[in-house]
Image (tube, rainbow, N blue to C red; front, side, top):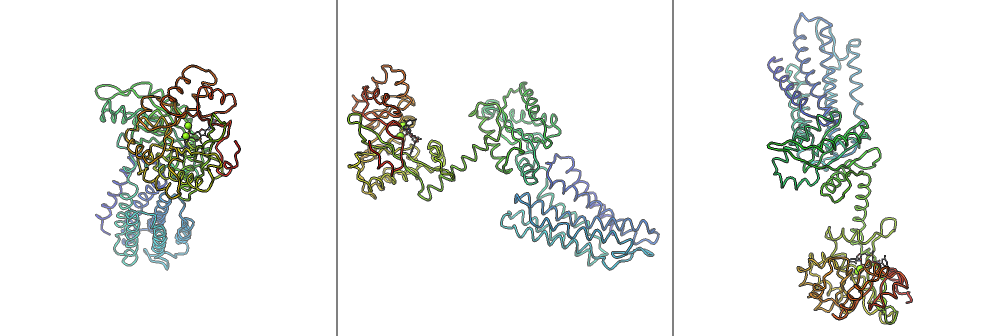
Length: 626
Ligand code: C2E
Ligand code: MG
Ligand code: MG
């Protein structure tokens, strides 16, 4: 064998190993396997060289020949097995489940190893008798190698749809190199080039999969978000528990704006270094935008860790030309008490960190369990909402409005309802805000209006005493669609007169309504009437009320409630003012006969509230006697 080839192979292996060992490595299985691979490859190259020299030399003694040849073959067997383990581990980590082939893993390696170790007695693989002689199973190590290449290839091909092009190409290329190495060595044993093929395979693995740089944050040698994901997912898969302390710099983006990007980055680098030095037994992560995490696997005392971090942050961080003071907030999680996937743990962690960073929440520290419950609930609501919208599954309840003069039913308000899996009602404010944010509100609004129109078409409104139905309108609805067009179309479809529908807009939303004025006026021209909802809950402004074509004002139930508890001259004057502006007034949230009496006295026209009836399913509404 060529001496310079072995030296080259060994040198490159040492460089890779050195680079790998001196960089911080995420404590995951893939990294441990890679380290084992480099070690085995080094041993194999060294003993392959030693064996080929000594086998060719007449001066070699039998015990030495036995030792180097056995060791070379053991390393060779183990290496094929280890490459297979690497492929399976990688697939596990990517597909977040255990690849089925992993149970097959040891079925070839261990029998081969046993046969090899029996060789000094049986001479089955090779013999040392007046030098080295091949035995009947001399090609066993290659068959072992080819079997594992086959297993790996099958495993990769089975999951080819879930893998990206680059990963698939790298994994298959890896098998091709290994196969070529085995075949050449088997068919042409005089060319001991196997070390070079192994080296090429290791470089493919290194570049494509385990380069430590892909897991390092730019600032100061701690791990990044993909590293945290890899570690938590692996812990989850192997059912290993860990504790996580996430923390965030409060108002990080303001800090950046005030102090500039460079100074802030400098401070982050300082924090990262401090974390690494102060908590050597834990893995430290920096996930950009002032978010950090510490992960410990042996039930570390996270309260003490948190106090230590808090204490350090009570002092400033040095930066060039000054220092920076920053406040932190914490999120804690213990995977032992959390039943969730690594992925959703990360998502929740990031969302919670964002929330506490912006100061949406004022608690300095919170547990991830609560956030997770909240998040899961939100996800459930979203799924139910999407399903209801697709399947026309939203319900609309009706709540009566009562005429003060006659004490009889005069109208109704349509209130949308959504049920969760268990059939319980979900609070509308929860899913309506969500629908607004996620772009579903226009469809929701049209579905509600359709339901109401169908109800009007199918029932005798006059006999029921219902003169109109109030439908709530979200201002966000206007942004996505041509509402006047869509509403007119729905009404025409059911033959409903525009006068039957009164549209409620809340007072809070009217503040930024200038944009929507055209559509409101267009709707008004088509014949829809407008109601100002929840008056008194926002920045009430009488002059603004006059800019829009309202015909009715609904006084917010909190205002009514506080007046009934504690009458003052303000509300009567307000109602009076509205009436003088030719606006009718509805009092919301009437819960008792006394309240009804009180608001009637100050001049309200219509009353709505639990005292008369809660919102009812449409069928029950038709049976209502008022
Ligand atoms: P809102 O338009 O002010 O509706 C009145 C709310 O007060 C309803 O709550 C109703 O159930 C409740 N309520 C009625 N009488 C009483 C009472 O005597 N005491 C108390 N404590 N509450 C009473 P709900 O149904 O939970 O609706 C909440 C809000 O969700 C509504 O407030 C409205 O802004 C919005 N909303 C409901 N349906 C729709 C819809 O179809 N589209 C849009 N855009 N928003 C809707
Ligand atoms: Mg309303
Ligand atoms: Mg209201």
